[in-house]
Image (cartoon, rainbow, N blue to C red; front, side, top):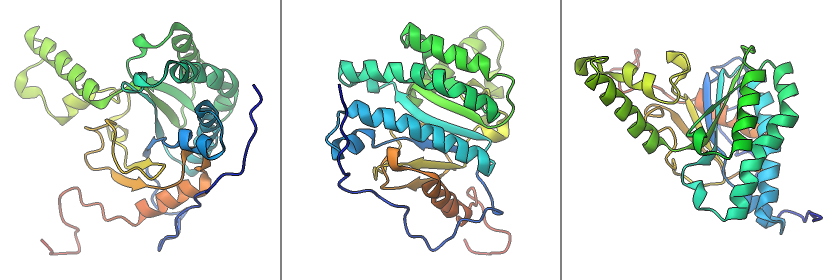
Length: 267
């Protein structure tokens, strides 16, 4: 099949902002992105949806390198949800092949960039070839100690929380965990981000592309105090400028975590 590209109906450029990105300013240690808009990107070009997903993987490569350059410690990308199995079989089959193609071609660059790959989700339900590709990428980048590129693959936050609760309940039953010992830290230890150091588990900034403004069952526990940023840019169009615009917004947020600023007496 020959894919012919047509002019896009509309390309969304980075939003105008009252704030400029400050490379010396605060950079979120953990950024999570809901990568949305691949299908619409393809539709705008009169291409099959799979062309959008393929282009979206190229964007993953670019944004990974840009986040690493900026000093981000963890980049979590919502790649495939537990609900995405409801999509047409041909599209799901293509999406399950994408990690294979992505890792087989990009791992050498990830090693060069000192990026460590991690995958969270219910991997045991993925096709064997997808599981093998994921396992190889994790093993090949295990010695890297730079940016953690964390893919949420066959992931759903409600299922994650239920799994954590079941695990803690079993530990209580087996006298391995006291009920009174269960707190935020223990809960975090049982979630799929528990492999990260405590201070990196919760994303400081969550970005969603394509103009949709919802969380879609993503990191519901971890984003309790995350800054949310929504952009109309479709994921294949998202680039370094868009990322810096999102971070510029973050740099100018007033993060109080339910308390007050030290320099104000406001209630």
